Image 1 (cartoon, rainbow, N blue to C red):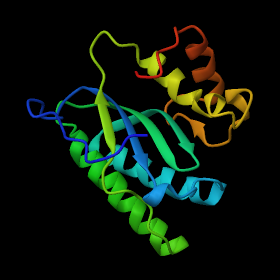
Image 2 (image 1 turned 90 degrees about the vertical axis):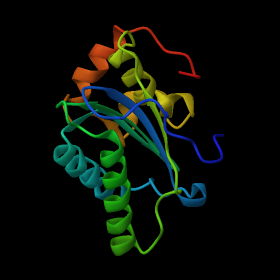
Image 3 (image 1 turned 45 degrees about the vertical axis):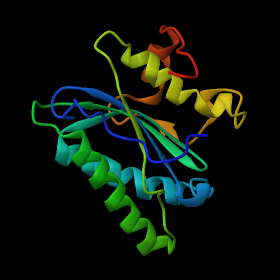
Length: 169
């Protein structure tokens, strides 16, 4: 399990046309993403933040105590740090307002994808997370994963053609 405060890259400004693999953990690793109500509430805020900061959610997966996102900037001035801050702050606010609980750990984890890294390979890793965690046998069975730009069948067909990435990726 990842612990501590992850640092942002000192020599990278998080602006521009980049892709990011993000992980946000729930406060005290509570199992808060087990109902459609809680997932939809948070997903709505992520989608709003993505629109405002000009990102798309290529893939997402809400595990019981964390969420994985693969986001891609759509403009030269897209700001990943602003997206992360808005997504966590707004979703945390609405979660507390509607469900009465703190949502997030203070820090999250991000990885900027290199130019030669396969977007769909990372999407596959995200979508198959519930299978690796033995929550379901097939990714299609998991109700809390998908994409804001592709239909689930579309992304599953595309990722079926991509090589798997390692667990450390």
